[in-house]
Length: 150
Image (cartoon, rainbow, N blue to C red; front, side, top):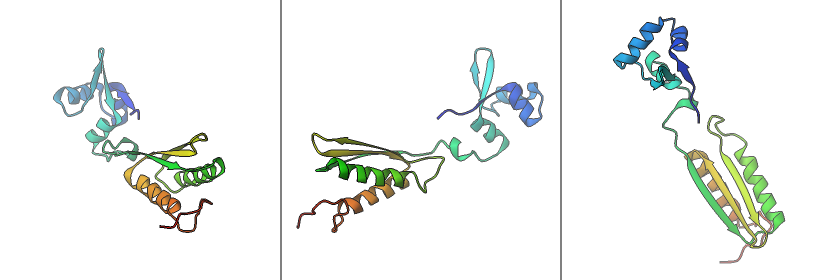
């Protein structure tokens, strides 16, 4: 994720300060900046830290992401398509838009195998895994497969 970068002049304009004042903040360590050539660049997060504003959700650096791969064997194309549609529809509804749940499905017809790749925050990924567990282990065969007796 790319964070916005501002020049010293842009920061001075945004804060209503003189450019020399902003440079003084940088030299004293009050404002973090990166020097690129002869110019300073200030990230939006560092500007928020200076002004005491809470960073927006898109700028929070403590965000965790989980990646999971679920492999389901014994699925024909039609069943894999139904499961893929369910998973993709679930991923595209009701989640935090700042950190979307990303899902991809790949069906190997030769091996009758479906792989589901899930990328997202831990809570949304856990919800998706619970859904898959419920669908795949349902006693009533939600996928149209015969469930073997234990």
